[in-house]
Structures are given as C-alpha cells and as structure tokens.
Image 1 (cartoon, rainbow, N blue to C red):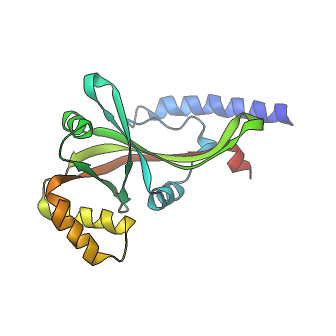
Image 2 (tube, one colour; image 1 turned 90 degrees about the horizontal axis):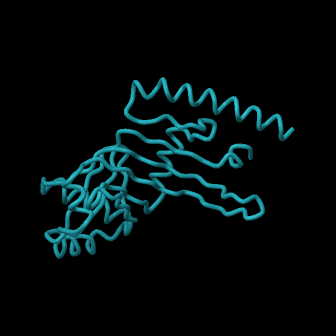
Length: 187
C-alpha cells in the first residue's frame, strides 16, 4: 500500500512539474508543485480572516531578505499594517514595492513521524505607504477594531494621540496560495 502511494506521489510530482512549467509562461507566480496539498481559495481567505499575525517579507538592505512578524487586518481584498514613521521596514518598502506575507494557521509537531501537520497561506503582492489621510485614518481604525473591538472611545483617544506618529501600509494581493500537510488531507 505504501509503495503504491509513493508511485502515485511520484507520478503526481512529474505531472505537477510539467504543469508548472506551462503555467509559468502565463503568470509571474509559480504553481504549487504538490497541488494535492493546496488549499482552496476560500480556505486560504478563511485563514487570513482568522489569524492575527504573520510574517511580512521585503527586499531589505543590500538586497538581503527582510522578514518581520507583524499584526494585520484583512478587508477581503487587501492587507493593512501599521508602522513607525521610519526604520528598516519603511526603507525596504520605499526601495521595492514587491512583498510577500505568510500566515501559519497550524503547526503541530509529530516527532515520531519526523514532520509537522501544518497549514499556511502566502500572499504575494505590492505594498505601499498610505498617503491619503482619510484612508490612513480608516485603515488605522479598522486595525484598532480588529484587536480591540467595541472600544470606540478608547480607540478614538489612541488615534488622536498616535496617528501622526505612525504610518499605515496597504498590501494589494496579486496571488494567494495556501498549503497543508498531506497528512491533514488524508484525515
């Protein structure tokens, strides 16, 4: 039985490699090699809606990758983050607007199998600093409500105190993909 599964997996990998080579011609983004493990768009969106933090990856100093854990809010189309007015993250965004954002929904270690039962999502897209003051306030309010809902008065006080000392960042998603461990697919 295990040998049959290995053969099927090998055939699937070969087909997937051929499909990926063909699809790269149409899209700047790679197709998932192990597409049986790919989450549906709805599942991937659900993870973005429910998680509270992820890792934002940018092109940093001297073209080294710069990845930073960060809280966010997802509005159904875009991701929003807040930031200090200056720093490594802001410099990287000003240098290159391409970014990715990864959220790990599940990471259950199974030492006896030398693996983890994972579920994660990666968004690829473009990130920019929000210049429009109305949009900045709206998105800061959205972020504040995400983490401390039903506290409008406290949020208003916080925004009056700190909005001028922060940036809001907008991440336009161009490609979204999710993946889970094969063991989760079999359950």
